[in-house]
Image (cartoon, rainbow, N blue to C red; front, side, top):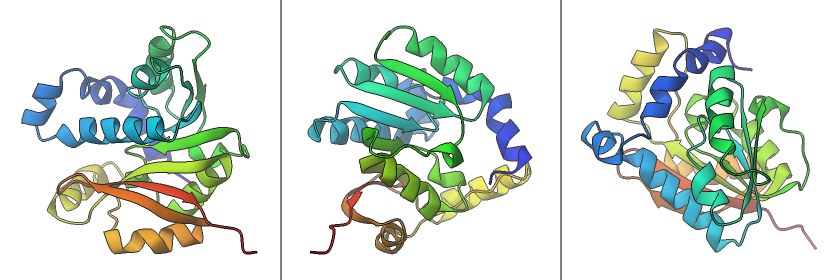
Length: 210
């Protein structure tokens, strides 16, 4: 379970994190270009799967809403931070009937086969039980897309910065994806590098033995 500090960290900084998506050129100058790269990759993967229903885990202020809803895809965004939910709800108003937002954490994902795709961008970074999250997403949807930061200097700097607020940050070696998938009852279907920032990985359900 997330610490109380984690639960308040993104609530208190919702507007700041939302501003990362305000200008792609500025974000790239500041070294945050992978935010946009992973967003586009997740949308492209979702469209390629002909998905109609998407669960956006840790939706933040809702940067995935527009590119998915404009394709006619129904999106349910969930986030535990009240201020993030308020920002996301404002975004959702532009897509009535297509986007809804709920305040809840990933630990409350209990749907089964309710979605075609479940997406978590910038979420596994802060999860100390990634197989549990991945498993819940895999039960809710047949396809799962997630972003995973790689270990290294970039992640270590984030660990130091966030650690001062008692918020954990985790890196994932690419060789660990298969084992993580197996613990969640999934298999790795695709993975795309984000430079030194990590990977976007698509998981599918493991085949049922005959």
